[in-house]
Image (cartoon, rainbow, N blue to C red; front, side):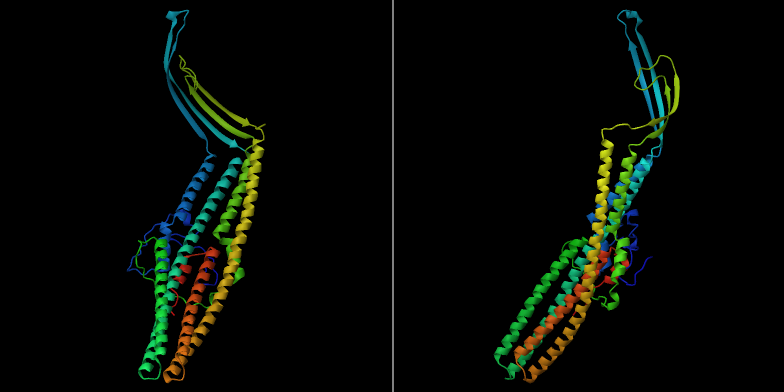
Length: 460
C-alpha cells in the first residue's frame, strides 16, 4: 500500500460498499448494498457514504459503461479467431420444356455447405483495435472511480453541512443561556433597587433576539438534515442521530503540497481516465492506418450436392476446397485517408484534454491546500478570540453584579462572546470542509480517510 504521512490522506485501496469493494478494483464487483439507516441508528459518515453509493445513478451509469466496454474488448479479441459457417438447403426443382411436354424433370434433394475462414495476417489492425478497447476499458474503470469520488464528496459535504448546522445550533443555545443569565441579573438588581426597569427591558430584548436566532438555527438544521436524508436515500422526515465528537485539528494534519501534487498526478481517477482515453485515441490512429493495408486469409470449404444459392444436382457430389487469399486495397476514394485524419484529430483532442484535466485538478488542489492552511490559522485565532471574549464576559458580569458597570457593557460583552462562539464553529466547519475538498481533489477517498472524518464539529 502506498502511504503518505497523514491519517486521513491515504491512497486508493480500501474503499467501497461495506468495505468489500476497493478503489482500483471497483469495476470487478458491483455494489452489495446492505447498509441501513433509521432513527435509532447512529449515523456515521462511513454509513452515510455507503448508503449514498447504493442509490447513486452516476456510479450505476459508469458501471454500465464498464460492462459495455468489456463487450467491446471481447469483440476485439474475437477477431483473432476463425469463423465457421454452415448451411443446409432442401430443394425440389422441376424443369419443363415446351418442345417436349413429356420431358419434364423433377429433382428433389438437399445441398450442404461448411466453410472456415481465418485471417492470418493484417499488418496490426486487430492488435491496434484490441489495444484501443483495452485502453477504453481502463478509462471507463477510472471514470467509475471518479464517479464514486464525486458521490462520496457530495455525501460528505451534505453530512458536514448538517454537522455545521448542529454546531451553530449549539452556539445559539449557549447564546440564549447567556442572555437568560443577563436578564436574571438585571431582574435581581431591579428588585433590589440597584438598577432601573430600563436595564431589565434591554436584557429581555437581548434574550428575545437570542431566542429568535435560536429558532433560525433550528430551521437551518432541519434544512441541512433534509438534504442529508435525500442524499443518502432514507425516507423523508427520518430523524437522524448524528455523533457528537470530532477529531481536533492540528498542524500535523497539514500535508506537504508537493507530495500531494505528485500523488494527484500519479493516481487521480480523472487524470488517469483522460490519459487512458488519449492512449485509446492513439491506438485508434494505428488501427485506421492498418485498415488500408493488405490482409491474408486462410479458407477451407466443403460442398455437398452443389453450391449455395444454386439448384440441387441430380447426382450426389462432394467438393472440398482449401486456399489462401491476399487482399490488397488499391483505391477507396480517400475514405481511408479521411478516417486516419479523423483519428489523428481525435488523438490531438485527447492529448489536450489530458493537459487540461491535469491543470484543472492540480489548480484546485493548490487552492484547497491554501484554504486548509488558512483554516488552521483561523481556528487558532478563533480560540484566542473565544478565550478573550469569555474573560470579558466574566469580568462584565462581575462588574454589573457589583454595580460598577451598566447593562449595556454586559450586553456588549455577551454579544462579543456569542460572536466568538459562532466564529469558532464556522472555523471548525471551514477546516473540515477544506480537508474534505482536499481529499476529493486528490482523488483518494478511502475508508481510513472517511473514518477519520466521522463525527461532527465540536460543540462550542
